[in-house]
Length: 190
Image (cartoon, rainbow, N blue to C red; front, side, top):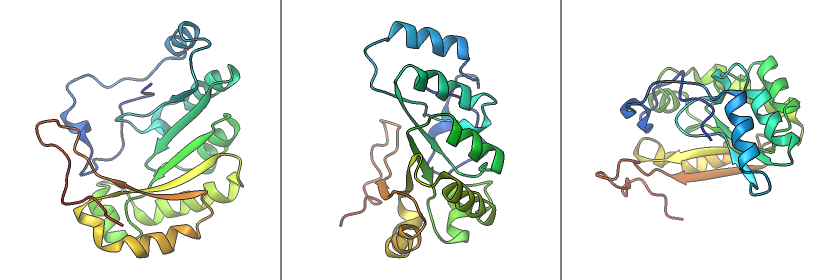
């Protein structure tokens, strides 16, 4: 379920710029209705798609609504809005699984990929979250592996393995436009 399709960045790999639908926010009422209709048939709700969940003013209430029903919850964030308040709200929401999308340990590469982001501020927010989280939410640091960052795999792994996250993942980039297909040049092969 997409919590929002609003975003504060213009990432080079994101198909969000091609979306024709209006920007919006998932309401608590609609979520409750969906949860009622799916009662007993849900294992996990992933609140992701094309937006940044931390832009939703009630993100923690939506996560909590699913958690109260015994449904596991997952979100992904571009990690640029991890203020102390947002970190506390995430941790107290009952969230089970969090992906921190950080596509480079190198500031210049990161800011080239995550257009509009500030590498230093993002890193400070990630460090704050990981120190506050202390294992409450299973946390993955994820790199979308593509042409712009493929040369730094080992530097990335060395940097983020010691971050305090539970897992570090390299995810191959696939263009979501079916006319284009996967970015086969960017797929990481071990």
